[in-house]
Amino acid sequence: MKFRQVLNWIMVLILMTTGLMGCQAKPAQPEGNARIPVAATTGIVADVVRQIGGESIELVQIIPNGTDPHSFSPSPQDLSQISQVKVVFVNGAGLEESLLKVIANAVPDAKLVEVSKSNNLIEGHEDEDSHGTGEEEHAFDPHTWTDPNNVIQWVDVIVEELSQINPSHQETYQVNGEAYKKQLIDLDRWIQNQVSQIPAENRKLVTDHLAWGYFAQRYGFEQIGAIVAGFSTLAEPSAQEIAALEDQIRAQNIRAIFVGNQTNPALAKRIADDTGAKVVVLYVGTLSNAEGPAPTYLEYIRYNVNAIVNALK
Ligand SMILES: [Zn+2]
Figure 1: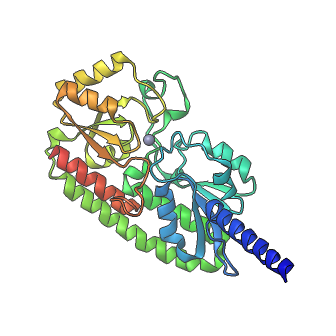
Figure 2 (figure 1 turned 90 degrees about the horizontal axis):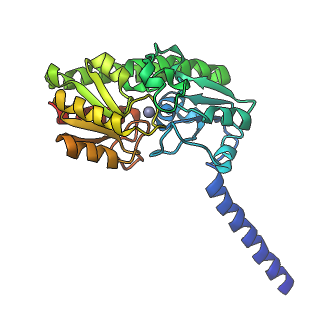
Figure 3 (figure 1 turned 180 degrees about the horizontal axis):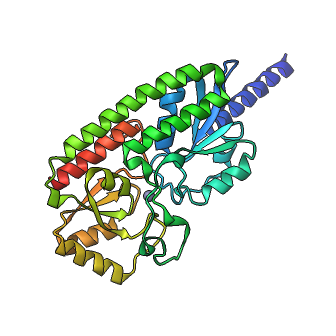
């Protein structure tokens, strides 16, 4: 009897340990149902994929909310979560920098799909992509989602890919995709309405890096400059560059410096103190967690547009 008790305890311990490990390492695995394992890099891409895939997919978001997508590098645990996926939806256009090679090596059988592949990309000027580091890869602005019309094109890419890997749900994906496109069209109209409160002469953006090109192009703003004057966050501005930006802010009577919530605001605060502009925090490459103000793409856009309008109107 004693031996049996010991054996029982050992079983309990094993179950507890594997249970705990399971919680840390993996999301719930599909049990007998036909959920298709799928991954997405950023929270923004993941949200759009979720709107279309719904309950038919088991979705892993690779880059956690609140993390800069330009600099994120995954841990072995992050990669073990995607070992089963058939497809990885990535933003593309250069956003995920070194991450894509790591993913391709970790899951060589999965298909990497760039949701931005149909978007008409904004190309950088020479001083945007050769700034400081001389990195050539940032020649295109990867922040395609700042214009919902680009996300409308993402929907078609996602519907097509999900339909290929899960043909029995093709109709659902199409219906979900069309419904979401309607919400994106409404969002575009809403943004136009909101920004109409900002006088034309105030539609000027100074930001932490050049992340709002598609938004500016669609809604009549001008990107005056950025603390890191490139499409990526991965650079340090020189003292001369900061001085030149401060001159611009004064000369153009800029009221606000918009910075991503994941960037260190110290430099932005110093520039604000020097020039009399104020620092306004936006969500840039990341959504908030569920309890925050920007847990979905639609809420992310509304939050940011409200913040921009309130600062500039
Ligand atoms: Zn960015």
